[in-house]
Structure formats: structure tokens, C-alpha cells
Image 1 (cartoon, each protein chain N blue to C red):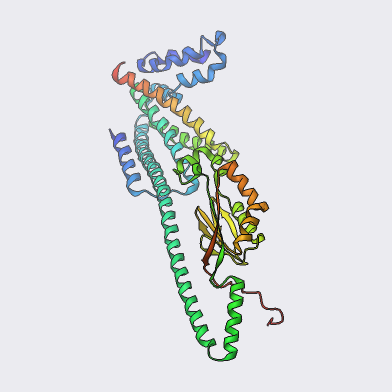
Image 2 (cartoon, each protein chain N blue to C red):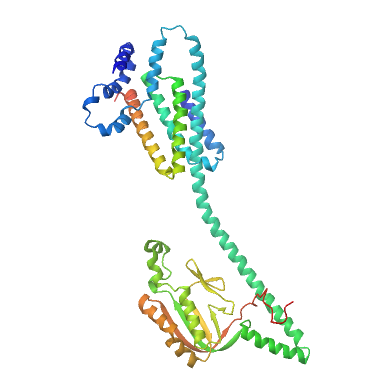
Length: 110
Length: 324
């Protein structure tokens, strides 16, 4: 419950204040969101599995975002930023979907 | 794998953990020697090991910790970590919202930019028109004052006559006389159709369109045929007038024109018309009419009036000997 409320508050803050993001950081925002979502879905699944751990969540969240950002940044420097961000989105998307499937199995037993 | 077996022994009291860990051991332990999809291991791994293994590790450690006495301190740090986790979730939501707002704003600004540019163009065209009108008024007033000033004495009248002759030659003053009218227009199919088709067909449209080169050709042909004064769509050509293109528009004297292009030339019609039509440029244009469907029409006229152009803006050129 608290996590959901926290997320909603965050979205409201972002949409309401609309802070200007430096142009250099703009391409990394969507990637950071997808990477963080992956960590969140992993955490939800771990919670349902009964093995959730705060420390692991915090570390995986931060490292996911940082690594995804670094990979895209490196791709930008090498001129394949677009392709690499696609790759990151695909891989993380697969993980998100399989975690979502696991969560669904837990919740609906189906 | 030795460690795997040991872990399983440890895990047996924790049923949920066992369920979670099962696929991992299943893929790594017994199948390794006879995997047929060896080249797919990366994909398979990606599909099966979706959960961060550190969760399992942490749970394993905790399962070991249950017996150990250091529970109080770990409870306090875990509360702090929970706060960090909530803060991270707020941050994630904020970043999501910011990214969405960013995309929305970018789309809005792209749409607005076009409208803004169009409005800008219209405003500036209006300003140019107003300035041109003002120029014409001022020019009229200058001419009036000039006449008034010069009509005083005999010397003034002589100067006025000389001035009129020079203005005629320079193309500054309006002139009247017989001549020909050359009408040049785009091919019917390439006329003012919907602009979407231009984009679809790409370069094919340009073949049926009058280019700046064609207009230059027509004007040069008329000069060569003996024209004394020429105007294009009412713009008088002088020694300083350029005919060029910008994008898809033809600029004469830096003003954009749209088809049909009406070129009026003053000269002896009996000479001007045949020499133009049979001259090199006239024949070239006739070829274009049959090849690309351009429309060309040459008519004689007994009398037509060509407006004068603005005074030539000579800033640096001085009469020889009068250099300051």
C-alpha cells in the first residue's frame, strides 16, 4: 500500500511541477524509468514469494538505473545510443513481463 | 555442483523459498551436460531467471540469521532501508511524471513552432507590403518636388529632361509602348493541386513546373530579340534585378512570384515576336511545352504600360571622376 501511494505521489509531483530537465539528461529519463520499473516488479514478486529484502531492493533499484543509464550513455558516445536503448528496453521489458506473469500466478493462482 | 546441494539442504525449512529457487537449480544443475539449446542459453536464462538472485541470497542469509542473536540492530536498519525504498519509489514516480510531461511538452512545442513560423511569415510579409507602399508614396513625393524644383528656370527644365531620359534608360520611370506579352505557366497537372501529392511523388512534379532558369531564359531571349524594357508580373527589370529561386518559389527582385508568369516587353512587335519565338530560348521553351507540358503563350500588344522600378540603391558606386 505504502509503495503504491509513494509512486502516486511521485507521479503527481512530476506532472505538477514539471521541472526542466537538462537537455543532456533527457534521453536517459525513459530508460531510467524502465530500469526502475524492473526493480519494482522484481520487488513485488519477491514480496509475494516471501523473500523481499529492503536492502536488495534499494541496491537493485539504484544499480539498475545507473547501469541502464551508463549503457545508453556509452551507446550515445559510440553512436549506437538508439539501438542500445532499444536493447535495454527489450531486455528489461522481458523481465518485467515474466515478473508480472509470476505476480499474476501468485495473485490469481492462474 | 556442490554448493547447490548444500543450499538445498539449508532451504528445506522454507517452502516459499524452495519454490522460488527450483527453476534455477533445474536449469543449472542436471541439464548442463545435455543441453540441446546451448546457443539459446542467454535467452533461456533471461526468461527464467527474472528475479534478482540476491533476493534469494538475502532470504537464505536471513534464514540463517533467525538462529543468530543480532536481530534488534537489523530491525532498525531495515526500517531505515524501508524509508529509503519509499523515497526511491517517490523518485521513480517523479521521474516517470517528468518524462511524460517532457514528451507532452515537446510535442506541443513542435506543433506550436510551425504555427508560430507561419504567423511570423505573415506578419513580416505584411510589414514588407506596408513598407513598399510607403516607398511608393515617398517616391511620388520626391518626383513631385523634383518637378516643382526643376521647372523654375531653363537650366532646370533641361536637367528635368535629361533626368527623364536617364530614368527611362535606367528603368526607374514608368514607360508605355507597343510590345509582346509572354505568358509562362506550369503544366496543368503540376498546377495548384493539393500539396500532399507533391510530397508523395517527390521530384516528378518539378518537371512540369516553370523554373527560375526558364524565366531567365525567356527574359534573356526577349532582351536578345530587341526588347527595350521588360517587367515580370509587374516588377520592372533593371540592371540590378535578379531572377532566382528559393526553395520552390521564383524570386524576381527578391520578391516571391507565383505562376502564371507574365513577362511584358516593350519593343517593335513585328520584330520582337518572331525573333523571340524563333530564337534559341524561344525554341527551347517550345520544346519544354511539348516535353513537359509547360504552357507558353506569346502575344503582340499595341500599347502597354510598364511600371518603374524603385531607385537603384547604389551605395558605393560613384560616377567616374566624382569619387570623393
